[in-house]
Length: 84
Image (cartoon, one colour):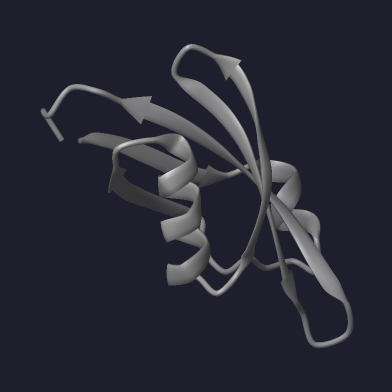
């Protein structure tokens, strides 16, 4: 199992000045499974991802806000070592 560290991209915070989650660690076999778990845990919709380097991803989510739909981009780092 791998650990995926999700943290909110700084520009995401500017959208309505809040976010459901700023930092989270998900244990999963793949980035896609980790993103699905994250979306279920934090009641958001997984929209897709972009692989930036071998262990870094940009993962996109959306959720319904009080007045409109909000979109968030999380930077996700894959940690294959079990030292955390």
